Structure formats: C-alpha cells, structure tokens
Length: 396
Image 1: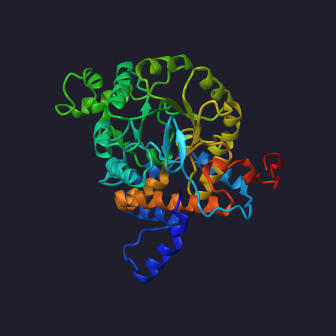
Image 2: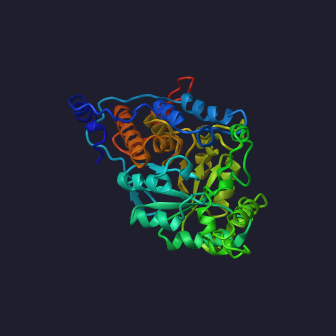
Image 3: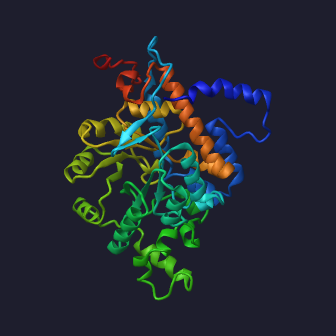
C-alpha cells in the first residue's frame, strides 16, 4: 500500500524544524530554471528544445489542460494501492524512466546516476541505444532491478540483431523500439548552437563496444575514434523500414516488443496485426515532428483500437501527478517520464533524479486519493470531464 502521500505532512514538519540550505526544488518550473542556469546552451537546448517552432511541445501540454478531474467524495482512500502489472511483473508505481540518450552531457553521473536513482525508487529504467555508458555496465550497477532496453533500429541489420542479443543477455526484460526517429529532426536550437553530441563521442557507447559495429571498422574505435563516429552517422537511422520488418525483431529476441511513437489509430491496428506486445503513445516529447498531435490527445483513439489486447503506455508532456492520473484515466497502463528527470540530473545528479521521481510519485498518490480513487486499477475515464465540462456518466 502507498504511503507517499501520507508522509507529506511529516516531511514538511521535519523540514520546518531542520531547514536544509541545500534543499532541492519541489516546483517543476524551478527544476527547469536551475537546469538552465547550470547547463551551457548546447546541452540545455538539446534536452529542453523541440522540433521546428516547438508547437508539438506546446500541444503536449495543452492536451492535458483539455481534461479536468472531477473528484469523488467519501470513498475511503486511507490505504491506497499504486502497484500495477505488466508482462507478468508487478511494479510499485505506474511510472518508468523514459529512454534518454547522451545523459553524459547533462551531468557527470549520466546514465549510471539515473539508473541508480531508479533502483532506489523501484522505478523501471529504460536504457537508450544512445547511452554513453554501454548497456552491460548499466545492467551491472542495477543488479536485479527492473530495466528495459530502447532500440534505435540501425541501418545495419547485424548491429540491430547484436543490440537485441546484448540486451537479452544483460537481463533487460523488454525491448522498446523507437519508430519516430529514422533520422534527426529539424531542431532549430541545435542547429543554431551547432550542437550534435554524437559527433564528439557522446551517446555512442553502445556502438563503440558492439562487435557487429566494430567489425565494420578498419581500426578499433580507440585507434581511430573519428572514423568510428563517421561510420555511426551512416548506420544510426533507418528510413527504409516497413511493418513487415517487425518479423526481424521477433526472430532475434524472445523479449516483449513495444513500439514507441504510435499516434495514429491505424498504426495501432497494424501493431496488433503484426503481433507486437505493447504500444507507447508518444511524439518523442515534441522533438521530431513540429505541429504534430499532442500525445495525450492521441491516447484515447489508440486505446479504442487496442481494446486492452496489449498494454498501452504513454509519454510526452508528463510534468505532475495529475498528468499521470489523467493519462491513466484515458487508458494508459503506465507513463514514461523524460525531461523532468533530466532537469533533476542537471541540478543534482543521481540525487536530483531520485527527488524528481519521489515528488512525482507522491503528487500522483495524493491526487489519486483526493480524486476519490484508492487504486491504480480504479482510475477510469469517469474521473474526467473534457473542456466542455461533460461528465462521462456511462462510466460512473
């Protein structure tokens, strides 16, 4: 049973009695502000920026504003259950740390700091293909803690197959295939700052340690790092993929396969038809297509197609506990959290990521209770009204 919300008053009392001069932020916007103060333009905007005019980033936030919570009273929410099940495993909270590459540009703790914070919090960590630290090292420091691996589908099929084998051998329990990045988007701030961290050796740790990738090089990455990075630019993305290529993934791993980047209901239908194990509704945090639909706006349409045949998760725009509750009410089994964790990492490394996750979980727990729900499974669309104020009485 959850005790995060119940401990808030005691935590405030302790802080009042013993003020901490190094106390970290609580407010999301203050985390972002502090990260902006700490980071140089290149790293900051690589995390905080989006595609084009950043209209999709704005759409993500506006999609949450459309829905309003209608709290219910006298529902006995003293003891709450925040656990949920996925692929035969039970997790403490419906949150996962989103796959985020090149965390080494944010703080020296990097991927390892984020992974350790997730171990402390019992939150599954999704290692990115674009991590600076190889996936095996991240797995090693996580021990038996839950972790998934995010795959950027390489143009070289042997590299893709190798990544899948390495993830399975290292104890990752699911594969998240990011579909919306077959190439880098038009990101104006990165272009303005002339900043692409991969070209300076950040975020390529999995490639430079991969036997299939290294077999394509005349010299080892240590002997000729420039040639290795230039080869990476040739094989990173794969714009030629089609739905029939899903079979390749299924041939090379026994792990559950989730497709990340699904927004269109017809793509959800195709995902079902091609036998994938899960969907993550996402627009990459607004970093790929400017002017795209907000992820939360797409979520109900996808869930309507899926009909609980496979789990549907969601990311893009999660900032507070109410966002988590709204996403679950609209059909998400769980949510992925990205930028907030990176602002925490920038401000205080591992401790910052832990604090961000802890605050978000407590906020979610309190919001769920005050809305009149005592378990994650009880959160349904009946909890919400749309912008017109129409309550879905059919689900009361």
